[in-house]
Length: 476
Image (cartoon, rainbow, N blue to C red):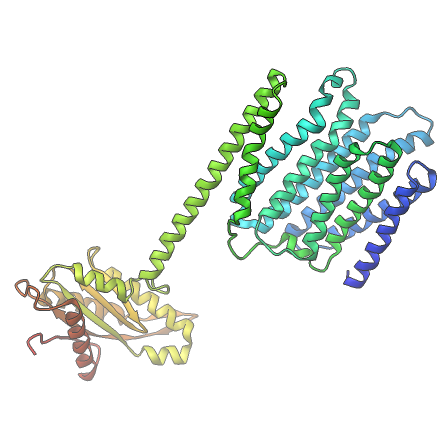
């Protein structure tokens, strides 16, 4: 649906909500309410079934099913009246409960799709805040009516069902808000719909006039359902089920909200000490639960920070293409290696022709395969580095220049083996310079000088015809 049609839909549903609220308790108001609600259910079903991907379809199917369940629950009383039968509140209670569960499942399904691999932190934060909100709702809307539950269980359930359902919706809203992802018009419509639903359920009890409470509740609930379907019809509705591409950041405000959630139960416990023993136990349990969730949340954040630091440290010292150490890490390895070690400086022969002719994809594959072959030709104690482009260095710990010659021969042989990419075979060679410091050289040769000497020897190998190694003359 384009934006103009969506605007017309919203205008029509707002008018219907006002008319239904004004006519609440009368046949005309009921006719407007059920007529508009049927249209909302039809739009919800059409939007859900038109989704191409099943992953996107299921959350909106939950929305459509929940709308139908709510409508059916609302219709039980007028249908019973038309059929001259005694109204039984059980079917309505079951259908309304199912509607709340379906709405909550839709929100959670959307959040799971949006958050992807970053779902766990959002779940921990959602549970903390949802427990805190549930405590407040329990204290204000449920606890005062527990005494009436034994005398009229169905009536008590019908009264507290809305607040209980609102906890489910709030949990889904929190998970959606705390998950990463885009938030444009579709997300705002969905959140506004959920907020109006919660306000209608909880706010109506504060209106002293029953007729006014019914009028406001009827209009706001119809508008809430219309906005929910408007989110499904919005051109950007795909953002609600599209996985986030960037990791979420821990906003400072979220930390304060978590702190408020942690203090909710202890504050109520301290302010109102007349609770029965079972409710005091419930408040204490809620305190322990929220504390555990917050500790788990921050432990998860610390682990993520440690992983990020390790990854950053690895990237600062390694080549991203081959995974070999870079020039900076090579300097540290040279400084740490004992006297009597050697350095091989390699430059690939024929690499530029392959890279220019077959493309950078083939060039990247060649560099990766050469890195693997260098690892296979060296020992675990040796250090292999990519210095940039098609240049590599190998630090042979504890091997003299004479002992490095067999390693160089093996590398020349291995690198020259053909490499396959996209069905084509490519061959490159290597020119190697070998420089080694004698065990009795002491500090006469610095790591920089040793690498420079191997580099110069490599260029001499190039001038001599390539595909060979040359020993550096350290005395020159």
